[in-house]
Structure formats: structure tokens, C-alpha cells
Length: 624
Image (cartoon, rainbow, N blue to C red):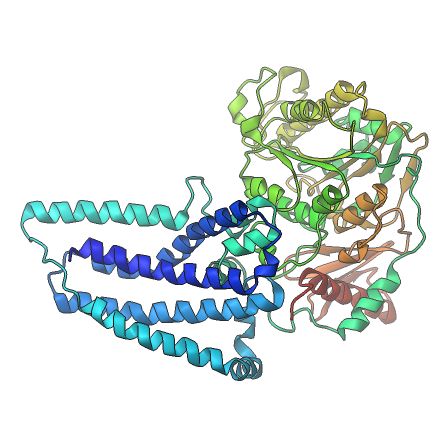
């Protein structure tokens, strides 16, 4: 047999293991999938081959390299194939364990297996409980070993060691190696295939049918540290839950009660710090006149103490759309969170209650995997840079690596043109021009000497971004849906490069809620956070059920004794009124005021630790 053909057979045998286990999961847990059409199930099974191939070739790639070498030794080949068999056996055992686990939580293993590494009692109990299955699997592996011996014994044709044949073998080595590399990445994009790509259908059951436990586990463990069993266990779970619940308010109302089933347009502004916005900082920089006008005139509600939970865009998006705060050793959305998070999400909630859902971002579709994330969490329409046409003249249109805000706003206006008639909509827009490097905008918005890495460069893009926002409002103000729409504006995180802000102001971002139908104007000083926005939006939509899925609280319920939590890399901080305290999850670090009473420190610590414990429990809801 030709060595390349034998290697192909070995790969197909390995992939067959994944397929058999997936079909077993589908058959045994059929009730989880039966509501889907036969065609969608078939596509999910077919899509699964992509993930199987990626992770399987990653694991056996060293053996592939060794088998492609032009070695004329039958013994050499036989040894390599026998070394492969234990790997196949371990893969089979792991996939069987994953299939059993799947029956408990309806999803695959991710970081849990690594976390169980030190829990020998649990492992022993599980092995004893499923002793019959352990026996069956080992018996099957033994039988397969018998047939594998026959396969390993098959002789391969010797390689001609002439110069021409060696050149030919080298070319085959490069060609096959390239093919293997492509299948491992399973993507022609900059980013390789990731767990989030399985959720493209927006259906969790089908996504989990597509995935396999080996892919989710290895992806999780290579990108994130495993969460130890007690990392977020500080108190009894019920005690932590009841304590956090006791801090929330009841019977609160918002000022938009006259707007029934409102349309909601959520604008996430790239790197807009409160520091640069006069309506929030009290300064006179005059960089954002349109935004200041919305905040100061009728219809605007300013939240002057609003904080981003972290200094990463994906953390902000995760907090806003899932209500899950960033946590140590927990992956971000799009990078493994979807394999462990059991909580609800905002867009799906709205969609299930009759809302059209739209996601649009200025940057490229696959930035942060947001194209797939959007589909996976309930957005029916998604648009990125590739879908947005140039309208204005710029010194260099391609210079803005994260897109142009004006064109993005106009795309949203176009998409919303015929919406809001039969049912309300929720539109989420993420701007990008104010991201470093700061591309030079159109001439009318260049107020300072421009430099792509300087504060002046940022200010120019901020002036442009604000102008673009103003043009968007003008564009849609005569649309039928306009008066029945609530706008929410906030930033993903602060700029951070140039402003000299002390903690916690260096996490403070503007939050403005505005509606043309609201006659008043308010300034609310309670401490708020991005994780408070999902329950707030659901409250505005009149959907007050299942809010226990969120650690955050409707911002219209909060008062000056409410708190915000900020993740500060290896530690966290709680802000309450004019006090704050940092904690490492083991020790108190620092506080303000420095002479804070110990009782108050203990109380703030209890809130912070209970918050993370409750967040973890909400996120992993359904885990056994």
C-alpha cells in the first residue's frame, strides 16, 4: 500500500471515532434536537466534521510529519502507527466521558475537566457509577487494538531514494503539510476556527451537536486557565444569592412608561471617555457638541457615574449583551465563554418577545468574531465593514482600520428604513473610527494638527464621530419609528492613552439615554455599570420576567447606595457612592478613603465577593 493512502486511511479512522460519538449523542439525547428540521440537523452533523478535522489533525500532526518522511523502514512505520493507537484510545475515552457529561448539562466539556484534575473523589465516584461503561469502552478499544495491529502491519511501498524521487517526496511533504495546516485552521480568515463558529445558526442545541468535547476543552485550556473548583466560592451559594438579591431594589419605574413597546437603538461608542465629553466632565473642550446637545436638552437622561467593567471592547460587549462581567480565568465571549455560559442573553430575549434585532459594526465582520457572535446570541441581521459603502471623501478611505462612523450610521439608517411598522426593533451599533491608529477624517472635522498616534489625532476622530452621530439623528428624525424610539449611548471603555485620570474615573464612560418623546431632562448620580444594561433594556421594553438571569440591576432602580464592580486584572474593585475598595479575591488591597472603617471594608468586600460568586453561578446555571 502506498504510504500516503495508508496515512489517509488512518486519518479517516480517527475522524470516524468523532462521527460515531456524535451520532450516539444525537440518538441518546434526541429530545434536545427533535424540534429542529431534519435538514438543519444534517447541516449541523456535516458542519461538525470541520471541528473534528481541525482538532484531530492538530493532535496527530507530529505523527503525520513522521510518516511523511522518506524513511524506507517497515519497522519504523509500524512503530509510528503503534504509537498513534494510544492517542486514538485516549481520544475515544475522552469523547465518551464528554458524551456522558453532555447528558447532565446539554453541552460539551470545556474547562471543567481540567478543574476536576484535583478532585480525585469525584473522579472515583463517577468511574464507579459508570463502571459498566468503562468496561465496555475498554473492551471496544481492546477489540479495535486487534484490528489496528493488522492495519499497522500493512507494508508500505519503499521510497525511491534517487534525486528526482526525493524532490518529489519533498514536494508531497510540503503539499500535504499545507493541506493539513489549512484543515487545522479550517478558515481562510485571519483567525482560525473557534468554538463560537459553531453557534452561527443561533441555535444552542445545533451548535452543541456540531461541536465535540475535545475541541471545546483544548480550545478552552489553550486560551484560558482552568477555573479551580473553589475559585469563586467564598460563601454558601444560597447565602451569596440572598445577599446579592437583598441589595436590589423593587417596584422601580422609568420615565418612558408612555412609550409602549419602544424601538431601542443602542450605540456603543469606541473609546469615548467621560473626560472628553463636556456634558459629563463639566469641561469646555467642545469636541462633542451634538452629543452634549442630546444630553442637555429635553429628552436626555445623563448617568454621570457609569463605569465600563474592563478596558477591552469584547468585555463591554459581553457585559452589555449577556450581562456577564469579565472574570479571571473565565474566557471572553467568542473565545470560549459560549461553551460554559448558561445565562440568557439580551437579543434572544427581545427576539423571542417580538422584536426585530440588528447588529452593525464599523469594523470588519470577523473582528472579535462578532459576525458569528451576533448570530449566536439572537441577532437576525448583521453587517460589518464589508457591507458598508463609502459615501464621503477622505484623505485615505482605507486608512481607518476600524471603519468610518458616518458610513456606518448611514448603513443603519438604510437598514431601519422599513422597520418599526409591524413590530419594534432592537438595533446595536458599534462605532470604530475613534480607535487607534486615528485615521484622518474628512476635512470639515479636522480641528487639530493630525497625527495617527497622538491625542490630537484622537480629538479629530472624536469631532468627526460626534458629527456623524448628529448627521444620523438628522437622517432618521422624520422616520415613522423615530418618536417611538429610545436611544442608549455609552462607550466600550475609556481612551486611556492620554487622559490623566485617577481611579475609578479612569474607568468612567458616558451613559446617555435619550428619546424625542421624553419631555424632561435628568442627571442620575447612582453608580452604574455595563452589566446593568440588559435588565434596563428589558425593563424599557416591558419585559420584566427572568431578570434573575442577570447579576446587574435596572439602572432606574438604583440609588446612591448602589454599587459597581470593575475588573482590574487579577483583582477587582467595588465602587459605592464615593467609596471604593480593591480586592485580590483573597485579600483587601486598598481603599478610598484610606481611613475607611474596618466594618465598611468588610461590608464592601462581602458585596464584591458575593457578586462574583453569584455571577459565576448564574453563568454556569445548569451545571451539576
